[in-house]
Length: 164
Image (tube, rainbow, N blue to C red; front, top):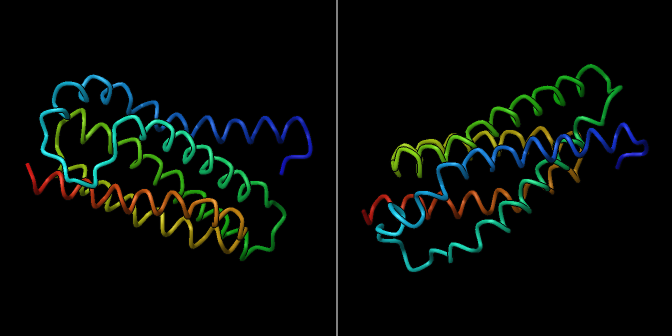
């Protein structure tokens, strides 16, 4: 974990960047929930709407800490440094697809495009975890709850697509 004010600032920046992906989606999500989303047929295993905020806030925080832990592993031998760099690049690309999901699902009201997006997101997340685990077991482990949630969200997205 951070051992200086500068490192704490960088950790906070990583968390804020990850939370930012979620904030982007809220601009289209909040308007769509009481209107379009409320009209959709949802599967019986669909969680109540209020659960999404706390879950995502927690997951984005874990994601930020995870990415910070990998970033903080500097001074690695060239092979490990390449793994670290690839993992972080894939992580940031994955975060783009994370933010894009809400825009596709709620903004464009397209469960199909959102399902394609979440499939790409899932693959990129697994790739990120592969690299992160090789740099920091803790960083990789912090993404496990997120992988579980994204897997569940993928099934939920597919069910909504099929039911509507």
